[in-house]
Image 1 (cartoon, rainbow, N blue to C red):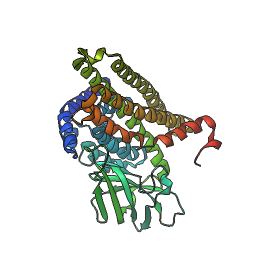
Image 2: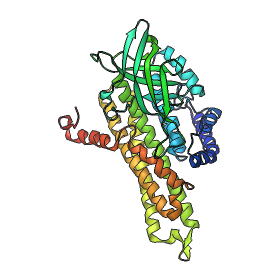
Image 3: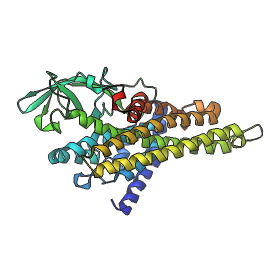
Image 4: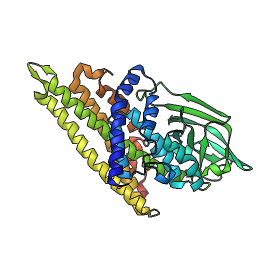
Amino acid sequence: MNEQQRRQLLDDVEAFCEEIRPREELCYLEHRFNEESITLAKKYNLFGMPIATDFGGRGADLRTYVDAIIRIGREGNGVRTLFSAHSSIGQYPISQFGTDDQKEMYLKPSSRGDSIMAFGLTEPEAGSNPLEMTSTYRRDGDRYVLNGIKYLISNGGIADVVIVFAYPEDRIDRISAFIVDTDGEGIEREDMTAKLGLPTCNTAMFQLTDYSVPADNLLGEEGGGFRIAMETLVSGRLSVAAGCLGVIEDCLAEAIEYAKNREQHGKPIARHQLVQEHIAEIEIARQTTQSILASAVDAKVAQDAAPGDRAIAAEADLLVAKAKYHASNAACDAADRAIQVFGGRGYSELFRPARHWKDARVCRIYEGTDEILKLKIAASLLGKEYAAFR
């Protein structure tokens, strides 16, 4: 991607964000899915940002894509989750592990926005440890037959295609990954709306009952699903971290503007020292998050340039985990401080800090909980023999 193409993509993202903001705010107050996020993303050709132009995408390099997600994150994690689920963990495994035929069949329509993607790993009893999943598959001639329940799946209720992970029925072999079209018989989906936040994006559970997919829809090698899942989660965590940086940036801008215009005790509250403390802490969170995210992006770029190098891959995995942990916690704190600056008004969903606060909380859970990421970080320092889980 040359500089002109990069600039055009980021201009398109900016135009999308400006147009989506009033629609997103209305949908948030009405606690409903924002269907116009799909319409506008198609309008500005944003559904294939990181996908190669050969397969219908914009061909954005990782740094450009991350910059785009940071900007989208300022509009809220609800909007950002649509893109992360679609591109960072939906399209990503196909672009990295798919055959040319699979890329042709699935990346082109998904890059146009004609097909929405999702990633089906989590189950009711298999969250932080996906190896405990109970979904299964069996080979039946030229098809695979899948059974199981997937839970808390971003885009799960609107997705046309889901990357689904399952064990063979005899559980002798390892997990495999499948590209599953959702228009067949034997799938039941239910939107999950009783959420603390993210009302404007889709979260769902679905059950597959003797669901048949072509054998050609096996993604990667049979038994190679766990590796695909783990590598995809690195991509997902990076996008969560980027979105959280956007949240921090927006909280800072909102707090500064409000503090300058709100008067109490005869002067703008921006002149009160304890208000300045909150603003200073948000700025520190912004800069530290920006720095650690940049290190993680550099590490992921190095990994992509040297596929197969385990040491480089491990370094990228670790730095992305650090970035995701730091950014998600910093976003929660920044939103909390912005609420405090707004005072009573900050407690209302009519104002942006409250919405950010509710939405950012899930970022400490999905794509790797705080606890799992801290164990990963600690194990890197103590040595594998001290790993909490083996």
